[in-house]
Image (tube, rainbow, N blue to C red; front, side):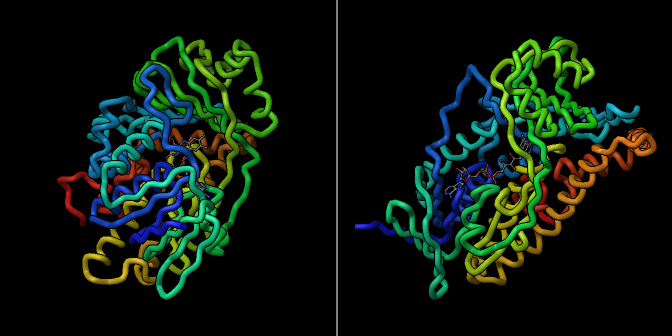
Amino acid sequence: MATRIDCEVIVIGGGMVGATLTAALARSGMEVALIDRAPPPPAFDAEHYGLRVSALNRASEYLLDNLGIWSELLARRVSPFRRMEVWDALSDGYICFDSADIGEPHLGHIVENDLLTRVLHSHLAHITTVTLRYHSEPVRFHVHAGIAALELADGELIRGGMLVGADGARSWVRQAAGIRERAASYAQCAIVAEVRSEQPHRQTARQRFLGTGPLAFLPLANGNCSIVWSCDEPLAEELPGLDPAVFAQRLGEAFGWRLGAVAPAGPVRAFPLARAHAESYVADRCVLVGDAAHTVHPLAGQGVNLGLADAAALAQVVAEARGTGRDPGSPRVLRSYERWRKGENLLMLGALDGMQKLFARREPWLCWLRGAGLRITDHNPLLKRQLASRAMGLSGDLPTLARPASRPAA
Ligand SMILES: Cc1cc2nc3c(=O)[nH]c(=O)nc-3n(C[C@H](O)[C@H](O)[C@H](O)COP(=O)(O)OP(=O)(O)OC[C@H]3O[C@@H](n4cnc5c(N)ncnc54)[C@H](O)[C@@H]3O)c2cc1C
């Protein structure tokens, strides 16, 4: 006979965003069922770095700290970056952000996606109000009499006050709820690999804008760097199959030998890049967070940071509604989350799209102009501080959980 779970919130997708949201909801005592079609995250591998890493900003760090996750990550392996250098291959444009200039200990941390997910799931496994289901997929969703009902492929039924889609860019929930999205391919892939470099990274994240797309070197705790090399599809198809020595030569040239000679320290993989934004974040008893709601170009390392801010905001509006006796899954409450996050996300989506387009242009006058723009900004401490503050997630309308524990909500 099919089993049945009754809970307050059903979350589909236990990636970094869905697992963080579940932890944030459980922190307010809510009963949550988290469903993922993948197996439990892999065990921590102390020898090898995971291929996929994310640059987490300060707001994400505060959020994870407030959830009791950050100390677990620190105890294993994260890498702070204190400086960020960005320069343009087609002009003399250069800008550098230094945490010391803005009175912060660091600008952010490079964290392995698998490690963060692992730590989150280990944390959730100890919370009695959380039900975890792996290897599990939804097949049907409907709403009846104010109840969100979900049927899983194995026949299990789950009922809750709302369904959250945290199931990534190809969200099943988004489709099941009939929410449309505006999407476009960049006709680019990101080449991702761990690389050794001749010169030390000095805890600096670096990005060079090439005519074919940005190439980032993110500093890792083992002294290597994780690269994210966004390039047009024909080049992206070629690079992963190259002999390691040839790849190293091409990579070194593309990076202007900024860290001397480089060599891959593991596999080289390509990930397709697209931009997308859901037309609505909300449907009847249903709400989207993270990549299910928006996908951005990785050029500023903002994707998961936006998703974690969604998670913190949704957990806050839901907990506030519940605490004051209102129905947390009502359209009014879910719309307040949408109003809060959609504006913030749109701003970032527009800025990243604009940057991607601007740096893809090769007309000499435009190259000169953006070079001049970067240099002028580099010499304007006030403007730099504002830009850094936005990228670090320290400005804008921040959820309480994404602020330092000692700093109360405005
Ligand atoms: C090359 C690259 C580099 C990036 N670097 C950065 C960076 O430095 N900083 C940054 O902030 N962002 C970065 N991003 C973006 C970031 O990786 C994404 O924004 C983030 O992974 C989205 O997390 P998510 O939890 O929303 O979705 P996902 O990571 O896609 O997780 C979705 C989860 O849902 C599960 N799932 C999916 N469908 C179903 C289903 N039907 N049923 C059950 N479960 C399902 C999946 O198994 C998965 O666990 C980068 C992206 C790329 C491509």
